[in-house]
Image (cartoon, rainbow, N blue to C red; front, top):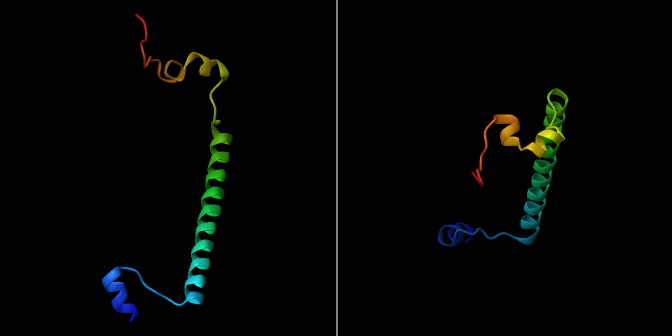
Length: 79
């Protein structure tokens, strides 16, 4: 009996068409979650880019972001 199987093994058995339908529903849910998170992330990235930009200047990147943004040096390799 299916209820006893779940209690003993933790795995529910079901007929193949029911399991296939559940698998399809879960695959659709995964796809919807992926598309939703991609679209929201893209919109947020575009908003941030429009307001303040996503990258630092090339000069700041060459100088080092610790010095350029925080005016401190993370690693002192030689003194």
